[in-house]
Image 1 (cartoon, rainbow, N blue to C red):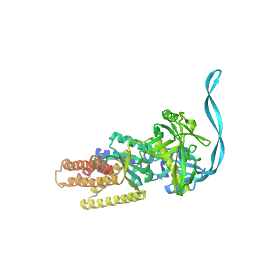
Image 2: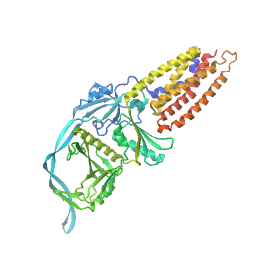
Image 3: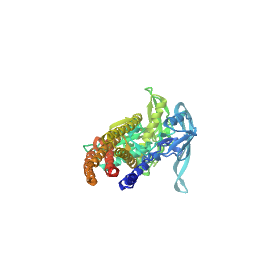
Image 4: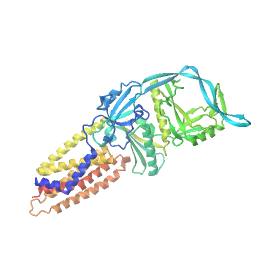
Amino acid sequence: MGKIKQIFQNIRVIIMGIVLILAIVAISPNPFSQGVAIRSVTPNSSAAIAGIENPPSSIWPMGRERIVSIDNNPIRSEAEYYSLISGLEPNQTLNIKTGKKLYKLRVKEKVNTTELNESEDRVIEESIAVNETIDGTVQEINRTIKRVIRVPKIKREVLGAEDIGLRIFDAPVTNIRKGLDLQGGVRVILQPEEAVSEAYMLDVIATMEQRLNVFGLSDVVLRSASDLDGNLLAIVEIPGANEEEVRDLIGKQGKFEAKISNETVFKGGEDITYVCRSAECAGIDPARGCGITESGLWACSYRFSITLSPDAAKKQAQATEKLSIVTEGSQRYLSEELLLFLDNSQVDSLSIAADLKGREVTDIQISGSAGGASKQEATTNALQGMKKLQTLLITGSLPVKLNVVKADTISPLLGEEFLKSTLWMGIAALLAVSAVIYARYRRMSLLIPMAVNIIVEVVIMLGVAALIGWNIDLASIAGIIVSVGTGVDQLIMIADEILLGESQEIYDWKRRLKNAFFIIMGAYFTVVVAMVPLMFAGAGLLRGFAITTIIGVSIGVFISRPAYAKVLEILLRE
């Protein structure tokens, strides 16, 4: 017991113990965690309207809001969640209980509107300014006039319940962030079309991050990287997304312009102060609806309103002031249309009402269309296209066009299997190493401290990764394996130096340990120098391997190895 007491009173062992405790606190293991964690919340969805917030990507896994029950039905897994919400009805009320509070939300209707051949009369009121002479002076007076227009009848069809807007995953049991290789998703590597500086690339990444967050994709990893030729790249990793959605959203520069007579009157971003995304002013266009095209495919039109800045409204007024008025039947329009361009390609054209001539109007309605093999597919594509366009209008264009160099879709099932295999292989490797060490030394006093040291190193490495928010992916696991491998080699070296000459009457412990650590430090600096180039190789995809290896060997050299050497000295000293 005296030697055990000496071990736990030693300053090196105490330091290692404190670091180990801090690592466990950072990891925060909770194997009994229940429910499903919220990955992201779709803007303007039923969940968002009910007050469920989109979690920031920087939040710790254990800090994410967890759904524990829906209508008093416990939710323990993704399968249970999707099984329950698959049978939702339009306008149904749900009580969603999370670890924070109880939310009450109403399921939206998925509506399709179709324009009929019939039409009906509708009376509309307009306010116009007229000049009248009163008591010899000319005064401007606002008058309300009524006129009758014929509008098509609209058939409103409820297709079912709209998705409530929650993306979830099984509740995490630790704060260790799993990389894309272990949880599935999309990884996209982008390269600027022209050479840019590092500061410029950071602006590009900031705009992309805002665009992805507005679109409803959170838990996003965005970072800059460079290849060995010095070319700057951007790497985007999004768990739980599909490749088409991500590629289409970030592969576009998003340069949106509205032109009249080839003159730009407003652009996406700063010129637009508000973009409506609620059902009252955004969705399938009730005036145009859905219909079958000449090619036999379905096409659906969408519309949403935006608010322009005063400067943009002034530009539009100046552009329309010089246009003439054209009469088509009972309708009066200006001679030029408002043309909408996305990345220099025209996406739509809007007729301008005659009463907007020369007026600084801030409220504009944007429209577009999308097709599909069926009415439901066309409706889905139209709403998805509308959502992307709204996102581009809110965030503006990227400072530079990006080309997709590579895009990978990773299955979460493969990651889960690999994680399980790695865990079992790690246990098998530890047992195999322990057996070899015991066969070599035949002393439990050497075997037990060595096995404990290996486990402590792995826990501290995972704790550091959790603390700094580093994602553990396949490359990082390889780095952990390399760190443990070099660690075992160095532990054997320390043991050999201590045991060498153990039978001598005068044994210089300090000199033997100094010899061992001289070799260990030389190996340490060699590994660190070798890992630095790998941080930039392969577009930065090997960065996880390099950083994890550097962290692992640093923990071993400065924390666990000195403690291990002192433990052996206490146990073996007579």
